[in-house]
Length: 372
Ligand code: PMP
Image (cartoon, rainbow, N blue to C red; front, side, top):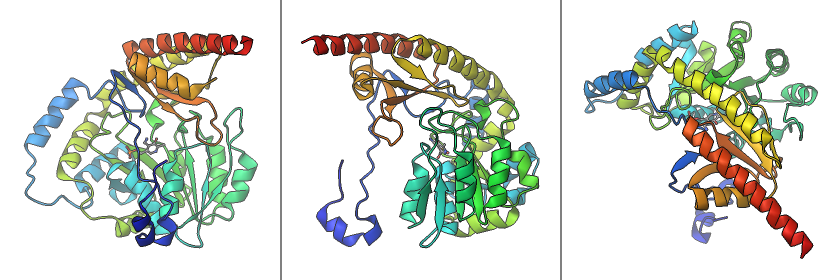
């Protein structure tokens, strides 16, 4: 892995010395199923409304710092008040602001890995101590007792539902126990919430627990990953604290306009989400049928699989088939795991066929090697 130069290692803050320059490990491919994007894109009717809104948006003035028009639309959608909503430049910005405001030296963030790696990364930037409560190595479900116990000592708990990359939904009863136990704040990251079974959201708990935050993004179901727009729903004083640390103009005018058009026409995304859910079932079943592949059930727009020589399989998918999936085989707890985003029927068909051929080929090579 790349390192900062010696000069930079001297100059950056001491706790940042071992940072690795970001390597997105991205190769342009025919089929990109690596980043859990919505590969169907924005529906044409919504895109037309968005284009009209963008064309009518002047760019010579600074944006409304708090995105109030968008906040009002989000609040109306979720049945809360404007004061309960804060918008960010992607969910990532809000996660960063969370540790900036509530983490720091002497504070603890409880993390439930394997999960989205940015929580621990942002925590480390803000010198926040990370306590990992590992998921079961077979089922990937959280260790509920250990999580509640760790929450008692935590400034922050972050739980992802559905979890990236394992696909499971956090039970509401567990989130309630964690919120009760935690003297600090509990963020449930529902970036993939729209792909889950109805009723999977923990939003109903917001009314009873003022230390709960629910994170959403328009990057996934709403196909706006490139526009960068996420939001948190929480108690007004939590929103105020997040607002106090944010860069005031982080959400630009074009993003605010595009996001508002998407939110106002959110029903038009329903058929796409339904199709992704149906394709997820097809992908999961087809992958499960491949000998030598284990797939985990998922409520997100991705499926996690384990197969021997996963890194090599992933490279061959890219180089021989021009299909990109995410390699997690280096990540703790995810040996030999790949994450495959649910794409269009054609994309899913392509990855199923290619994976079946490569896994068989690798198994034959291994057998041949063993006989040498
Ligand atoms: N949470 C999870 C679990 C994610 O997987 C992602 C993106 N991959 C995000 C949050 C952030 O998404 P964005 O910054 O695009 O809103």
